[in-house]
Image 1 (spheres, one colour):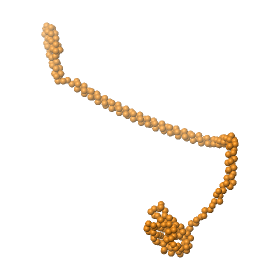
Image 2 (cartoon, rainbow, N blue to C red; image 1 turned 90 degrees about the vertical axis):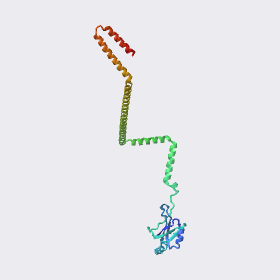
Image 3 (tube, rainbow, N blue to C red; image 1 turned 180 degrees about the vertical axis):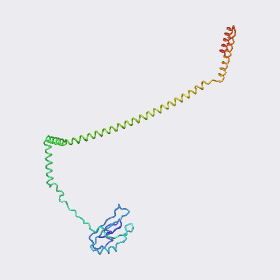
Image 4 (cartoon, rainbow, N blue to C red; image 1 turned 120 degrees about the vertical axis):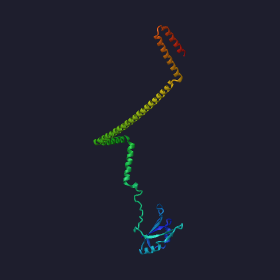
Length: 268
């Protein structure tokens, strides 16, 4: 069996047979078209099984390197070689299934139909009996289901589920507590910063107020001179008063001089 490779992808089986004519005696001829998924390596191939092995050499000398031309004018030099698999695939004839369309004659199917029709008649005739049977089956299933082992497994499963829920709740509570503490710390920090800002602003306002008071209290030059004159006159009046106190019979004169000095001060 030989294989002819690298044939044009658009080549058909009839065209290949026409170009290979005349072919030596053979009992198998299979043509495979190009597979588009193998692009750009799109080639057709053909398998031929010769009856006489000597014809293989003549066929190879004739068609190995033979140039096939497709409908677009492209050249494809063919390659002739032994097929990797030398066995011939046999086409199996599909036999008709003997049981096709014979279900109506099957005894198992007929038995099923009879039981199905009987169940339908029973349901339609006496539904109370059917309900009782269903309840009995349900009670039986429940009785079978509630064994001590199953109860133990069920209780253990519920206990594990309860422990998981408690752990999950505890974890959630701890997370909420941590979150609350973080929020509390942030709030305290903000309050401390706000208090410090208020103290700074208060100190700043007090310093500005003190500066303003000092500026308002600062005396002018004319006022300073007037105060100095008052002080000097007061000192002179005291000196005169002391003189009159030392001299005899100076009571009336002393009182008059005091009244005169007070009048002068009031007028000024």
